[in-house]
Amino acid sequence: MIKDKLNQLAKGKKGIFIMSLISFTESIVFIIPPDPFLALLCIKNKYKNVIKNILICTFFSVLGGSLAYYFGEILINYALKKNIDFIVKNLDSIEKLKISINDETFLIMLTSAFTPLPYKIFCITAGVMKVNFIPFLLGSIIGRGLRFYLFGILAFKFGDKFYKITNSNKFKILMISLILILIIYLYYKWI
Image (cartoon, rainbow, N blue to C red; front, side, top):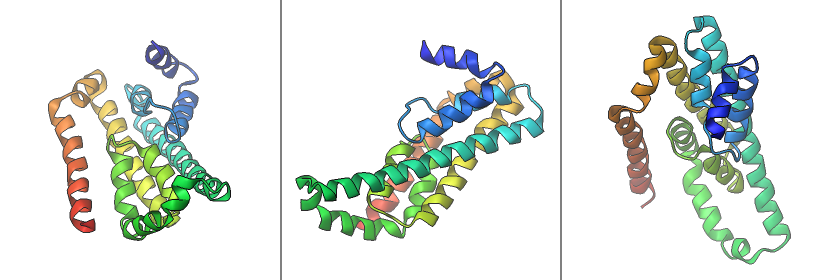
């Protein structure tokens, strides 16, 4: 019901604003991804406008992810200041995890930004662990940019058939495969 109303708004004059707002908030807390709204704005549109919509969606998504990173930093600092037992007792584990993840930040953010993995969780966690921000940002820009480019161009090229493509088993297998490759890589890297 909410999704139908948002789809209706996305087709209207405020479509870019709605997509930008959803793209920003989805990277922090919102559960509905911006991809369908981006696709609606790209179907039956000029190529120049499609690219503009992709760039806007990417910008606001990465901006939201960066804010989520900052919230993660605030969260850990608050926990330390208030001496929250769970955090204080696990500082060594958090630091060890940070050390092992720091070199992989770019790859982790690239994968979480591109696949259906919960990007917001990775952004907040990156802030909690205070991983290097530049690889975080670059992985987010490239991953989100590629994801939204794929959705925008497919919507532009295939129009209304686009939703059939994204709901196909081949597309789902591709997404699951990317997630499994990352999990296997990280498992062997850390263990």
